[in-house]
Every structure is written in C-alpha cells, then in structure tokens.
Image 1 (cartoon, rainbow, N blue to C red):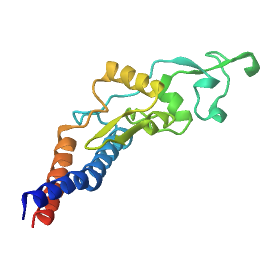
Image 2: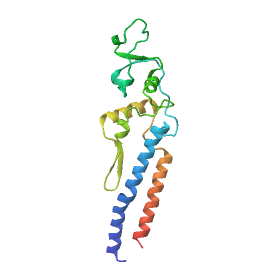
Image 3: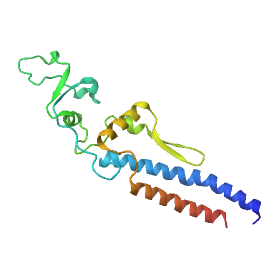
Image 4: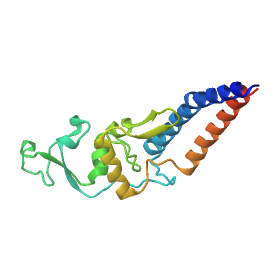
Length: 180
C-alpha cells in the first residue's frame, strides 16, 4: 500500500466512523438516557429521582395537561357552587394532580407533557454528536429540576461505558476492513 492509498483509507475511516458508528451509538445513548428518566425515574447516578410532592395545593386549569380532568373545587365546597372556583384544590398536591390525569406517580419521571423530552435531541456534526435541549423552555425546566434533584439528564457511567464500548468495537471493525 502506498502512502497516498493509506492516507485515503484513513480519510475514509474518519468519514465512516461518524456516519456509521458515532451517530447511531449517540442515538442509542440518548434513547437509553430518556428511558432511564421517563420509564425508570432514575437520575444520573442510577438512583430514584425522588417522589412527587404531596403538599396540598390549588391548581388552575392551565396547569392540567388533560383539561378534562380539571374540576373546579375549593378546600371546603359545602354550600358553594363549583362555578365560583377558578382552581381545583388537591389535598395530596402535585402527586394527586398527576393521579387525576392518569399519569404515573410511583416516583418522579421528569416528564409531564412530553415536550421537554421531545426537545432533548441529538445533532450530528462532522466528527461528533451533540446532545441537549432545543428550546429555552426545556432548558429552563432541566435546570430547575436538576437544581432541586441533582443531575438527571447526564448519562450514567454505565451508559457512557456502553457508548464508548460500542464506538470502539465499531471503529475496530471498520479499521480492520479498510486497512486490509
């Protein structure tokens, strides 16, 4: 193999590694992180994110993802018309807000309407992938929950090790195929 052929093969390796290894491995990593948060309710250390608040509270209709679940009522509704209330009193707080809408409440899933997770995306560059939030609102939500609960969206060590292993194995296969 001439030096020119070798350089050409290395350039091909660089292009192939991003397109066929790094981007798919990054997509897999992103999906794994999202599933850990939304399905398992676990943070970046693999522990439970936390529990939903059970402190009594009033919620307005705009705070309901499923508007049909909103039933205006006060703390003491005896003798009062529901139409006089603009909020719904829930004695078990945010946990009950999720319950009345049929959302999971066993532990924090960091996913209310789905818009934050939908905005957690990957963008591929020439030789890298970037993962993050595509809207200011989702970024603010992330910062707010992580200020209270610690790292959630950062991959766990196990997730990063799996990503690195997938990339290393893919690169080895391509190198072997190209440099033969």
